[in-house]
Length: 134
Image (cartoon, rainbow, N blue to C red):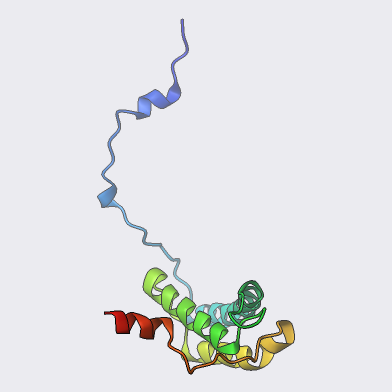
């Protein structure tokens, strides 16, 4: 007598995946508790996002020097926030964005030696060349 595979009993089951979604069920909490959560997360998120920006700045290579410029990191921050809003529906508050903008201008210099070099703008950019070719 052979032992049956226990997974064989499930092979004939059919489940309609369109009956489900990725919604999350949240527990009901008091408004004061919710405000405490938001305050705690605001502090945590600012710290982790600053650390993430330092990590990204150290990993990015500059086009002129070894490290990127402040404008490159600012552009990365804007792209990241726009991507989080577009793809994951996570919106950053204006205060949070301003805090990180100021961190890049002031605090990031202490952690990563950002480049101060400027590109020579007397030449065509890749976008200008594409426009000319069209």
